Length: 301
Image (cartoon, rainbow, N blue to C red):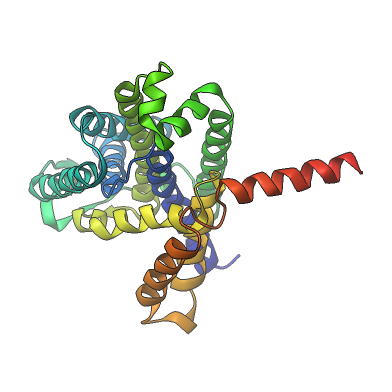
């Protein structure tokens, strides 16, 4: 497999984490424009852990997920009484605050005669632990997709559980969910924390694959795209956001046919789908039909 394909498949996998993060909040009934904040927090935390503190990669990725989860949980707690547009704007404001703080953060140490660590707007380079541990780009690509596969399976198992049903119920009708005994405010905080952890894990992987990060990489456009991936791919299953990422990065960004027009085509596609299929290509109805067809095929096999 050539370097271009390895890089493309790796990028699809890493961005899928932040797309799943936004999707989890969407099915809970909340629109977040700020999941790039948890992605960035995870990237910086994991990068500092390996490049500055000399932690092993596995521990650093776990720290990235933890910090992303804490950031997401903090936002969920502070906005637990907000709804609709107010919640969306609050998440965007928090993400921009995190980006500005990262631009002001200087924390460097000398490692092997080289200054390593966050250097404000100059970025953070030297995050080479993955390759120092023997991970070549193709092996790291496999690691990304193994972790992504485990995350998707976790999402699917959760959605089939009572808690997952309660989450979708709260997203559809929070008043009815409260009457049925669901603590919607507490559920929101937990979901926001879980969504942040997923994005933080993706950020840690992103930092170690690229070996360099800077605050402007985690701007509002990443959050907008993460939100749009679920709206394109569908909110009926965790595979929906992955389809959205595949359409945008796998087809539009990597194809010469759409060079210079990618954002126009992507924006138009989102607009059309919001009119034609408000809950995306794989919405709940489509997932039910696919499940019924598979069940019927098994019965006649």
